[in-house]
Image 1 (tube, rainbow over the protein chains, first blue to last red):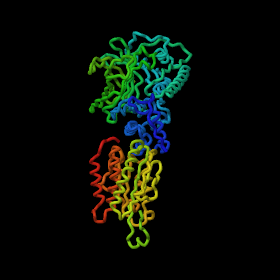
Image 2: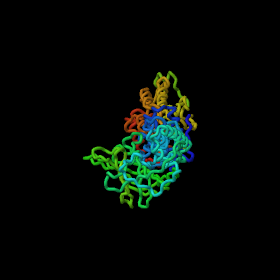
Image 3: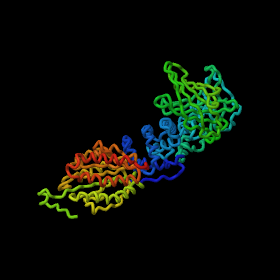
Length: 398
Length: 233
């Protein structure tokens, strides 16, 4: 006999008062255990079972079925192991864009399905930190992280072309700090085999620590753990921090600096992530990280932006500004197949870095083919009122 | 009530006819709370109307049975009980909606072997708020193949606005007759009172009184549904 569960408030409860993620994930897990994954092929049965097992949770059931109707369980089940935080965010963004759900409700539903399907506690999705740390294990590792919930910051693009204009920050981070200085050191030393070995070891430690901190967090999607400082190999002394490269205000695209690390998250060609640095009129340098997922029609989508004043690089995730899910639009010029995608930070969920609102436009740098993360271009301008104002900088993506 | 149903009367064609009235009640988890409480109250309060309907046709014996289904299927009133002896025991809800198994159980029970003697078309009333969680179509197909299943007057009460009316419509099997819709405790009481009495009268109406008793019932259902009442469920 099924024992339906009443909702109880907890930290996992969304703003809208739905039941805790762990509770509904437990119910879903029991349904899947009893009927197998095949039950998900039958919408009526899935809905009937949810209603029977959680009779007092009409709202929760509707949220779960909204996600079901957008194939969220299918997408998550296609992942091997616990879905990555990127995947979670991608599904949340799609759900927000396609159904009009509020972001917190969409996240609740995606987290519930994710936890039920992976059998892992809610919020244990592999965080960007872990992804970044794993990536750092590659010989050309060149990034640090802001904390468990934040993507990698590219302060010093090692692949910047020699001709790229660099702007020295007026406030160099202290040499002893672990973040930008460490990144510079890592970049410089990564060519040495012994150092690479040490780096890989350090990255694994970061990955384990990051994963554990997420597992310990009730809802990993909303409460990042304290930043995991990358373990420093004991070997060489850190060289001085190189200058921070910021986007250029030049009209000549050949003068625009390159920013590495643009990617299709999870190899999904409809999603992009990239980051760059902007210097504003008040001399502040902000790093912006853009995540965009387009709908199937390719003309609209949703995205989010994170920003950090680089003076706060060592302050961990607490100083990371982040937007809610934002609409993304795209113009497609069919004759030349130039795709121009727009995202504007009209609001912030939290903005401890006091990041200015910006209009970000990105597109292909080559008119003969659609934008790809490599060899793309972007420009950012400050949002003034409701309009995109003066250009702050442009750059190229590699 | 004495029912002179002996073999000598049967041979003479003078035995009383039986009208089996079967309530099939969804007791799954989604019925918990207000719905099952309202249903218990509604059936209890419908009993006088059932008896009155039976009394209008004293030449027939009205026999009542009750089937509940959730995780499993159970006859809570297994042996047919004369309506004037019928008492309602409150049902509780919990579990999944194995409606297909319920149809199969009805098919097994509504056979000439288990319903000997002269029979009027049975009246089956299905009360459900939910979506079946088993293979309901297979169960329904088996039910429709049974002799009395196909001949029965089948009434469905959809409890709540999101009950699976498509399946309930398949159960009714008559294009013009829709499920009775009950979206609140008040309307559920009214629907059950109607379902427990009016179809019984239609089934026991003298031959020739109506060309198609189901057609008349369909009009009655439509009329009932016009007064939808408050949308609570």
